[in-house]
Length: 444
Ligand code: DOR
Image (cartoon, rainbow, N blue to C red; front, top):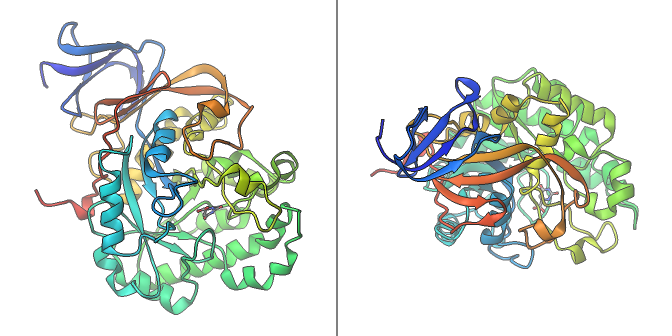
């Protein structure tokens, strides 16, 4: 155990491998170096965290930060600002930028643009295309790569791999767990006429539960045939959740706070096109099954699918409006409010936001409060009640589907490798670095 510390947090309740209990936490050189009773006077900085809970840093495994190419919506700095203001210590960013992250050069340029500029740590998904299938096994192992992302149904941008032959080739060629946007493109195309001009609620009718189910059934079959692991992003339907519960050997499951919290028809009545996302929000019956999956352990991780579009873009007339809503900054308060309401335990929240991402993606040195791990911490006040105000938001898009709503349970501090990236709503200096993965450790 180190006998001096850069920072010691005193008196908080730690949520870690021993369960939940009061203990001091010592940090040195960006790592956790002691848990327990730490004597006074050994630290450069001592922070009294009495009454607060310290969780392993929240890792948001699905965000869209729009850089390069759509920086009027968001960029890597502002997206990560939103992340740390909301208690998130690391993000996995999606490849549907302009140009998309589909080559070695595009990935390297994102890593370079993010290093030391993002407020949190990061990794980037590599998008699968018909042209890069044969290189994916190399691309997925490059520094800063979170793995391969496949749009099996089209959403924002033009990344799409929807034919079985290419999907099978992707799975055959990669070794890491690939992540999928799962909606059946052929069915979406067939049903396009169900979109009603000016009526965003028809989005949910067009992109129906069968489109999601058919696609997820196909991906499960292809993954089983290939003997590969897959990750189904933002699961939104009851039938998929039931099916995925039968395939935990090959498939992991993400749900979003939006699908757990907002439901049709109410969300469209209140938010209009701001409630438009892919896969779409659904009714309470589907939402109840997402909560069933969450309570039964079927769900592995929460991802915010932070997908910012400007208020102007969202103010057009459906279906010309883009799909997606921001969420990286509200993930923690929205879900802690559910914890306070008794819908999940704090331990399960930790399982879904740090241990879960670590287990699925093989993250090295993060995802756990333990000696030797990166000092990535999400420090929360479970009793704090606050209203989401636009002025609090770090995202360039400047709005949230939760604006005006009160949530109980709020992030107070965000610590990234021992650095205070956010404390009491104030940002620290940005010093984000690539997340490392056990399957692709960089050589020293
Ligand atoms: O609603 C969505 N928006 N779903 C996605 O899968 C993509 C995202 C975006 O990039 O805007």
